[in-house]
Image (cartoon, rainbow, N blue to C red; front, side):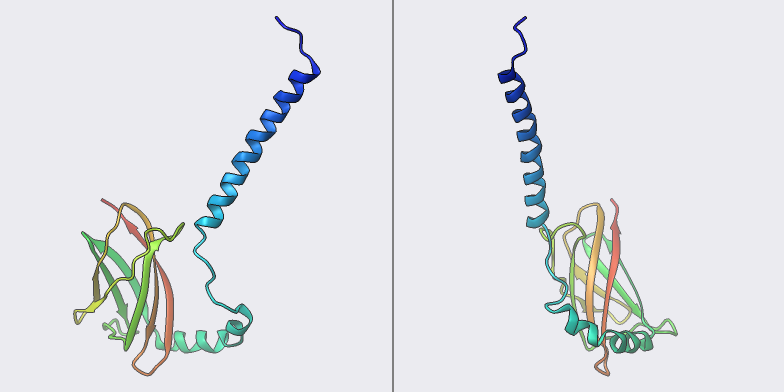
Length: 150
């Protein structure tokens, strides 16, 4: 067996730290590359109206739920009496919570009782980030967790 020299120890330590550094750089790059971005452009400006917007949204008394059946996303919006709500405008992004690769913009159609849109899914945890406008112009924003099972 060859003797352990300073040169061998140096290369062994340099190799170990090189592997650690490479893995850390790869993980940092992956985290930044999959980050979906900012929620708002200026958080300070958005915070100025937060309480008023929240109060107006709560005053609507809406309850929101969503589920996937086959390849259709079903969005239920009901008022305080449990009746379906037809909104003036509805925008949504449906995707994974961890990256934006699978994000979709569902094209919802109101059926009289709920909103339905075709989507492409796989089993797992999905999020629906919706923005609706009530008939009176009140903005309503909510995130809904959707668990897809097959």
